[in-house]
Length: 266
Length: 308
Image 1 (cartoon, rainbow over the protein chains, first blue to last red):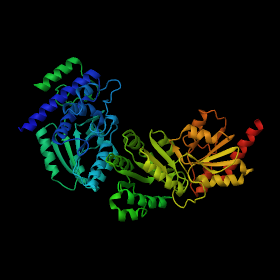
Image 2 (tube, chains in turn brown, cyan):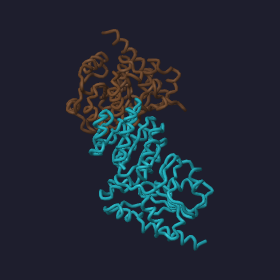
Image 3 (cartoon, each protein chain N blue to C red):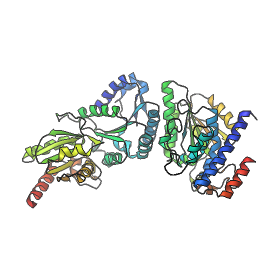
Image 4 (cartoon, rainbow over the protein chains, first blue to last red):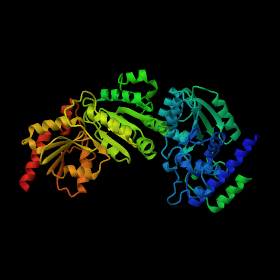
């Protein structure tokens, strides 16, 4: 295992504990999705210098803001003190990101689905017009692809050949009320995206080394926007949360937090 | 108005390369000159208005000044959330230019009539609303929109709107077009031609002042009160539902003031327009053509005079 991989695995562990802890303290939901997305946000932030100037990261599935805050905290972009204000009175760190955190902390205040790809495409196109080399990263959910606006964005990005645009799908196979593949016809996703003119790849979204490799392979493909279908597990890292959609809604008890922590650190 | 818009924007782009026109697949040939001379400053985003707005906000976040151009209904109705969240809430300045506003597309039917757009945008904090009566207004509104730090919605017409008012607009939202005494007739957009005909046909005509309400947001209560307090009657005339249009905006201000004038919408229409036709016939259906407006003014002023 490469040293960077080891470092990133430990980083994810810290973030997972922070996320579950805050969910317990503040009784906030969307825990399952935060745990499916965390490894991807981790890779983007640690492999690329996300300063939201040159390289930008757009969290399209805004309900996983806690996962983003955990990364920002462990990257020391926000302080622990700021992080601890999560979901408290008068905080800017709500369950969805606030535009008051813009500039270096967050790039885009999301919360409603179907906006991130279009926004990040605008950023990517700006870089093309300015002839600068920054990359525009976005994280979306699989359920989010129900939104027609995503497909409008997908078509424009392909037309514009935005090869500096990287979309990650946190493909955890669940959305609010059921399996994403049963609610709408999502598959065959890779072929679908390929036919829309994108360079697409599939990867285990929790295998940090493979995610990094997949990005490297896609980086070489010029002239096409990139999409990484990251197969993930909702609630990943904690046995009693994994693939159980109840954790879209509920928060852990003190005891459950302690159990989760032991599992993550073991 | 739209041809003039394309001309003005060409000159603006010439001076500022950050301005980018995004089109929702309309304006066939309208932007040819821009496309030819400044190909990077024009982009057809396809028939995909939601993405056009969001994409524009991404461009705006990187220092560009995107102008989103399509028919008002499609520009505003499909995209409320994109405008609210991504432009206003995220503070990414964009300029929305809605063409064929009001009843401009009289023969195309209700899907193309923008009779709710002012109300929709007026709900969103920090967006300017400009409503151009003619190309002179349009030129100023483009300047205001470019200069403002906030996003703007410009409600413009279609083509061949005559320039019939002599007075030019300034920073006051109400532009006096014709001076009178007891009655203020306030209109917005190209319907100014109807207002002038009403004045010419109502006796005594020296009684009516006509105002072009051209900047609908932001408005300061004081600016409006100062201009309107001297009138006994205020009538509003608009190609828009009055309950969310200029009648609503002015009623709100007058309700909070010491002003004792009566405010009355010329049309009190709450229904869809069932017939299409010439603009005049559709205005008639909507209750805002000359004869209906004249009848309304005469009835209201007579009734109230009698009751006093």
